[in-house]
Length: 132
Image (cartoon, rainbow, N blue to C red; front, side, top):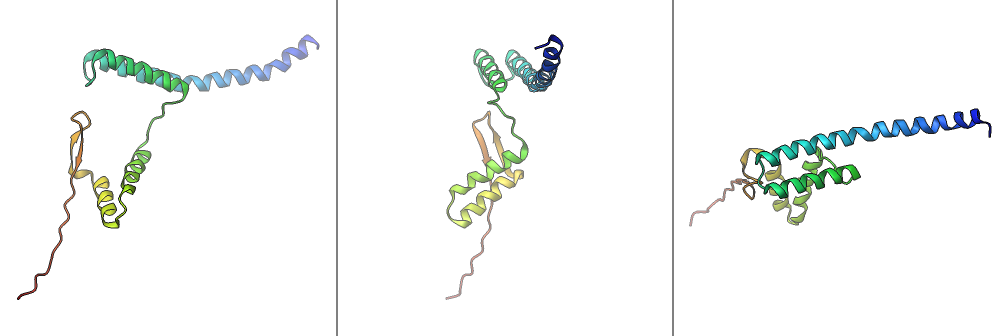
């Protein structure tokens, strides 16, 4: 093959590699920024984990992100996940009460750090008592 033709045939391949590298750099940069934030939180003691454990977890998250195994959850996906947890209830009334608890954020107490969230729901029912 003629050297000029060979060089010209490699140009599109080189361009594709450069574009692919540029696109792959963006998630890596974001992952590295997240790692730096996590690392700073670990070093400052603003986490519930021991420092060594926190740093190890931050490094593992960075590795997983680079491999594409770590995704960020958007609000819609998190809400869908919360509603799917109500599918365990077979009784329609229990399932409706679960959905009401999940969707009403006004009566939530606790935190993940404290061991869990407590969602409160109040259902008022009236009964008619017939005179004897």
